Image 1 (cartoon, rainbow, N blue to C red):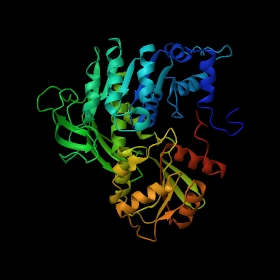
Image 2 (cartoon, one colour):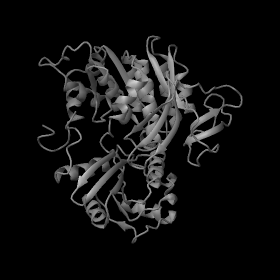
Image 3 (cartoon, rainbow, N blue to C red):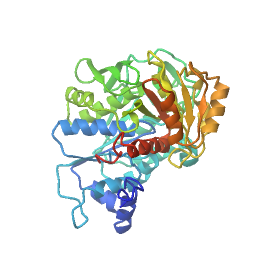
Image 4 (cartoon, one colour):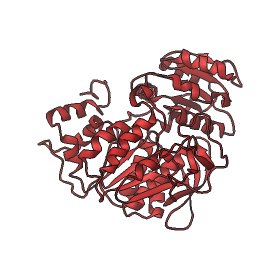
Length: 445
């Protein structure tokens, strides 16, 4: 009904109804699967989940997942409801593997009721402070539930994130690691980095190399927390702008090189996590990399949408770390792109938009620049202080979604980069769907 009435994709309301009818529906359904993989973290959940699912399908497994990115418990319920039999229970596919992305806070509340095979912890960055609070709070909630996991579960964690490392090490069972090896040159943290002290003793961390934010090859000077050696390591990552990434990884085999259609250094971590997850599930790194190389971006994550006026490249951003990585991505383009930035303040974006002052907009060198979304004028003020000057014309400010999109397309010369917060990304996709330029994000779910 949600889809028929064009109110949405039914990725939440159907889950709410299912939970009202059957309060324990999600844990009962997930625990009935042959194996269960949960993916959580601040950034990269949707992409990493899609890559793990692709690796499992390539190996011949039936996979159940929440490909729409709806990752609260109601979103999981909605994804599972699509698999329900007439009596409401799950269809009997005992060999099915569940691969589900889970919101950071939802993981803390849901995990004690589940029996996962594998829990993937990607990263912890400052995000939606009005909802999550500081990342130490999230890390504390994670530690409590990870410590309570049975020995039979495997935890896969990002060795480059000291906060995630401090969480994963409390697990009593097997822990696998992914991270970087010879990646990064700078040894100084970015000014906006979220973790500077050892999560165990508080001593200032020392970095031999920084990838971005607080991710890198770190060490605690007192030895209270030790960075683990990654089981799957990023050796080299060469960005090709918004078109993809040339990546070299090491796992059980010698170094493997792969071209992935996923842009940005952050995608290298998503790929490494997916390969390490496949490895933990009994799939060889080479087979996993073949599947990754054939998996395009998830909706809104460097998704390309053709229009009569040229291509749109839709880039999701939701916090300082993701925004700064997107700016790095755009800076890698040989020719500056025309750019539209859309800032919303919905619940899913974070109602507090002060995080834009930790985004290094000073680095922007767009060809033409348009600003939109509900908080377009807040964004305009930030960019004024950043001194951003487009190569052609002045900065255009147009609150809303459709209007700034039309204005940006009318000014663009070829490809248009659309940088949008979460609800703005959904809104601009809805405009594109209404004009016949793309399909709804839930159409393949």
